[in-house]
Structures are given as C-alpha cells and as structure tokens.
Length: 361
Image 1 (cartoon, helix red, strand yellow):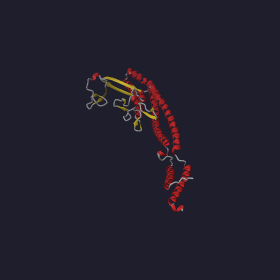
Image 2 (image 1 turned 180 degrees about the horizontal axis):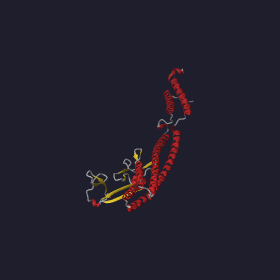
Image 3 (image 1 turned 30 degrees about the vertical axis):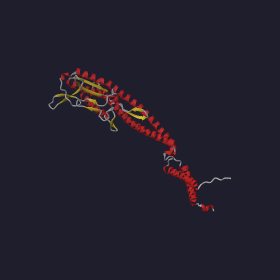
Image 4 (image 1 turned 60 degrees about the horizontal axis):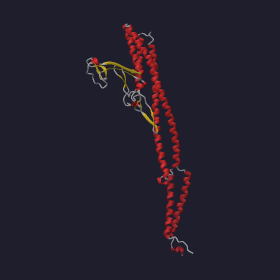
C-alpha cells in the first residue's frame, strides 16, 4: 500500500496561498465598508464597473439637460411676463387712441394724450431692451447689442436680428439630440418705426442738424451723405405696436397743429391717419398673443421634459445604487467572517512555521 506525501515546501505554499486569499478577501471587504461601495477596483467586477461608468455618464448628461431646461424655463417665464406687460401697455395706448379719435377733444386734452402716448412708448422701449442672464431677450441672436434705440428724429429702431433672418434662433438641448427654440425677435413682438432717406445705392441716411444749423444726412455709422440731396428718397417702414405708437403720437400732434392753425382739411387728414392706428393696435395685440401662445406651448413641453428627466434620474440612481452601493448589514457580517478566516489562517501558518522533525519523533 502506498501513501501520498506532501512535501514541506508544498504545504507551505498551500498555507501561503490560503493566507493571501483570506487576506485579500478581508482587505476587499474592509475597503467596501470604508467606502460604502461594492466595487473599489475594476477587477472586482468588470461588467458592473462598465455599467457604473455608463450610468454615471447618463446621469451627467441628464444633469446638463436639467440645467438647460431650468434656465430655459426661467427665461421663458421672463419672456412671458414681459409680453404680458407689453399687452397691458398696448391696451392702454389703444384706449388713448379711441379717446383721441373722439373728435371732441380740444388742444389741451390732445396734448395731454400725446404726453401719455409718448410715455407709453418709452416704457415699451424699456421693456423691449430687458436683459435676462446678461442677454437681451428680444435681440434675436444679437444678445449683447441693445435691441432698440430712439433717435433724435423719434424713430424707434430695431438693432437686433430681424425675424425674416433664420439666424435669429437660439436653441437649447433638453434631451439627447432634442433642441427647443427659446427666443423670439423684437420686431416680431414690438415692431419698429424707421423714417429715413434712401440713396440711389439703397443706403439709409437720417437727417441731423450740424453745428452751423444746417441739415445733413448721415448713416448709422455717422458717415455723411455727400451726393446730390435731391436724389434722396424719403421712406418710412413701420410695424407692430412701436409703429402704431409713433404714428398715433405724430397724428395727434398734426391734429393739434391743424386746430391751432385753423386748417380743417389738414385736421381731417390727420384724424384719418389717427383712426388707422386702431387697426394697427389690434393687429399688434394679436401678434403679441400669438407669441405668448407659442411660447406657452414651449413652456408646457419643457415642464414635461423636466418631469421625464427627474424620473430618469431616479431610475438611473436606483440602478446605480444596486450596482455599487454596499448593503452595510450584509457587508459587516461578511467582513467579520473574513476577519475570522484571516485570523485562523494566520494561526495555522504560525503553528506550521514552528513545526520541525522533532514533532514526529
């Protein structure tokens, strides 16, 4: 009969491997308890580690989309508030236009109405030049350029991106590959009034008085027109509530002048011009309501998107927790067992190291 013999070296190797294995298991569980994470190294569970990386990436994207959505909603809230105010001031101006068209107002009353209209106009310009987050809301893509200015001739000029230029659009990404338009243009909401002289090469020039009291014509950059002034053509472009306000103010002044001079024909013509502003105010009001309705729909979509992002965040966070978070009660129990196993391995190894040939004699 033969018996298998295990050499001392082999026995020591087995003890050493067992000791290392128990030590590694004890250290791994200790690290898990300290960090609260199941996986402290990619070799602990390669598949779970990859899923953790991908889930964290998705959560990072959702955080960005949530921030974009929140900022967009805040800007749209401000946009809606401003258009609501604009609609209120427009209604006031409309009422003043109805009063002015009464035909029974004297010069004093008309002058008072004109002052009120001019103040509403200034307020409208201030509204149209409102900033949000250091950007002009109604400038289109030109968010750093003041959208509106009133020049010395009373023009209400729009300097932002025009509505017929598709580059006015500003978008924000609210989901992977999903973008939402969050802006409009000043000329679409408020309109403008631009009275100028056009040269033969289609350039705009505006009349100014020089230091000698003479009328000169300059462009927006301050360059003076040097050609034949008879070749300049007077033109007026206008739209929206800004155009209606300017025409109403001018026509009231024309009626005042006609009454004071006793020119009944001029007075009748001026009242006709004044009456036309009622339809302009009506259209301007509808334009503002259209924009409010459009962006009301955008706000609803953003709210639904926010809800979806929150749900996705909860689901991914729960999934991430299942992948990496330690069950402390279970981990503590396993850690105690690993500690006992490691200590037992140390004791066995210590006893084995003390054995010699004398133990078998």
